[in-house]
Length: 246
Picture (cartoon, rainbow, N blue to C red):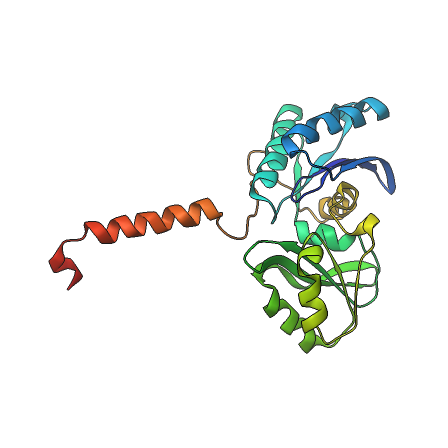
């Protein structure tokens, strides 16, 4: 099985090609450029270096969210375009699952955290059982303090990774009462290689969809949508007749 994988769900842009248990290529960049500038050039370079015939891939795995709204749209649009053009299925891989998969067979709890602003994180709680990733609690969006309270109650060693670590490390050090550690640089952010490896497991389990079916999983509405809803509510309240408000 040969899979092309894309991840632009966070600050990192990453593209990979994996065939069975071999990672053929991975190109990952975390440096001051937008995903619209990097993702397609990275894909072109990997195709050139590996002499890949895109028609011979079996599926396209993509980090499906949560994460950056713009980044997810770029990744999904790229995957959908390729899927439609090549007639290949898409494999949506939850972002937090793929992050946790970076720490394959790590003992204890694995907790990816992505900064969702306003003291909120996108997160999930995982462990490995019999060499397989198991979700103790599937990915969700919530307050970082609530996450730490839940981890304290579980009473186990925790390994954190994700861009939320640099934002909330002091909060973790202050409020977490169980042993913990932070993953090192080579595995602490999104990697398309993990999306590809986990994507292969998803294909075997039949977790695929057509390119037309695919859409990102944002977990919550964007700030722009929240602000628009607030404006519409204010306009609605202002337009109500006096007798309607009695």
